[in-house]
Image (cartoon, rainbow, N blue to C red; front, side, top):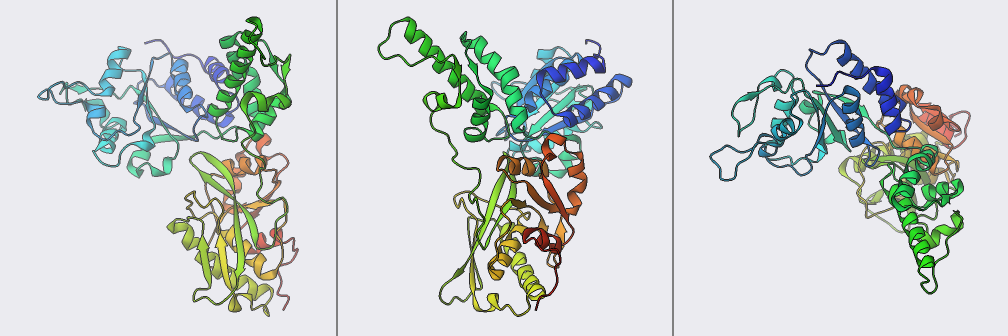
Length: 478
């Protein structure tokens, strides 16, 4: 095999293939440095986890280039049998070795880099997890047995790089055998730079069209056509623009009747003719937050998003004090019950004469009812919406919040904060409340993510109340 490349050259390779990602590159270089100093130790597997389209697969290829080793990708999406990795016994007709031995043969090396893609999408039945445990465990993979070969193969010097969109669904014993590196989505500024420096030059090369896309048009595309954390859809839109420009040029040269115009440069006014009307008309459901509504921040495997909680008083009698809609999962429904209990306590402490909840049935709804939702991090948002309804007071317009709430009002740490903050920035939110337990995460974020954000850390709900309703003192008013 080729000797490892120096850290400076490795850093240049990572910078040339991926923009930004400072913390991700730092973690990768740390692993490479360890391999440079001690090449005899078994490799520990790396898991790159993050939303689709952020460059996890290409990062694996860059790691191989940095190590001077060959790279092979194996997709595990939908894998439901151990034979995917370990092959079939030779007693079966048409039996073949597994994909791991195929990769080793194609590389002609037992020291290459093998990517196991989409590990979070393997079938929960069929024993694939057990095979992966054997492959990834340094104490076992030195004697890996493919069912077809039926002889031990030493895979301890192979570097396995795995990818996932949601690492929380990966079984704990499997996760314990990997170094987890979180790959987050891109900010608006990063997307604009990547489009200018990488996507547009590639599209020009593929079409031969030298027309520029103005920076304001790129920003318009990112804001109103392509809000996903990754770059796949954004790249498709840029390619579509250049295909339309190519058609315009060919139509003009061949005197086709009523040819489309070929602008000297593409501005936002040209976009409807090139890629259709904008997919989004607003980043926020409410420009001014009404009483009984609060903005939360949600996270899923495709990134962060704004999540509104709406509460209203129902007319007429009902046997239940609370009606809940919005296709909520079991954990989120439990959060509603805990939020209701906290709202009762807050109302008693802040305005003891208010009997709103005693005489009212409340309807709590989470918009986008066709989308399943679950998780505990909307606890403080639900509590705030309920309290705002009871007090007949609106939450400040520029505020979004995230945090689990306990039955005694403690605000508990949540995950996915970086993606949630980026979603808030996209929506024009400039004030965020999050748990005190996430302060360390915030301090590690790059300045371009935190710039312009007024952040508040809450240990208990009192702090959330003070920020949401702009109260300096959470005192009983009687």
